[in-house]
Image 1 (cartoon, one colour):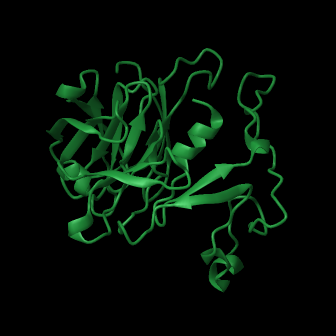
Image 2: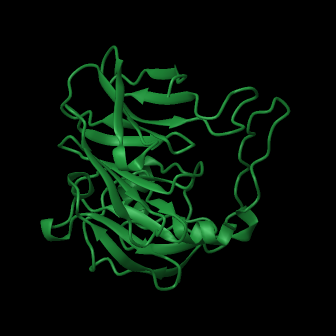
Length: 282
């Protein structure tokens, strides 16, 4: 997939669903430093009419937040080219960006009216006229996914874990516009919050809602080797205060000699200790 196709499918925001295209000047690959690790990303050169933060890129100051300046979206080398009207489907909820595959994007609508809830599928093949091609409502997880919606291009899977419930759903997105439910399983005691795929797409790690969970708590792990028969693997329990909000797993080439998907990085809730875990068996 070229950079234009990637950006078209990825940058469909979850409120008014605008389609944004990155400037070609930002499409260069990240440099690698002499020790083999990814180097720092250079400072972007924003356009003269862009609305940018006054300080560090990606950081809004207290004055910007309370003056109302941050209510107008910040942008740097982004151009609105099309949108799906927000009054069609309301309730887009906070999540770690929409999931995407091919020319499609996926987002949950937990905060909308019950008649409109579900995982919305956005067909952005025409970036000037993105349209809703499906609304997934056939699993409890799709109706209340919070920030768990995630996709993997290697296995062409879309997953969601239920917030306020124990359901976990797996969809085949070979036809990205019309996902097909493959598994809907129960994870006893789960209350999904966020999560991440292993890079190969065969395992998903589901973090837990920290709002009401007390101290400690598990990280749920699901084996997706057979999407039609998703299996819960043994949970990993945190010792201490809180639960992990989310996590990331190392991609290929992240560090010299480190195999893909063998290290997870997690911030633990409440007291926020940092956890580093080696994954060797799944």
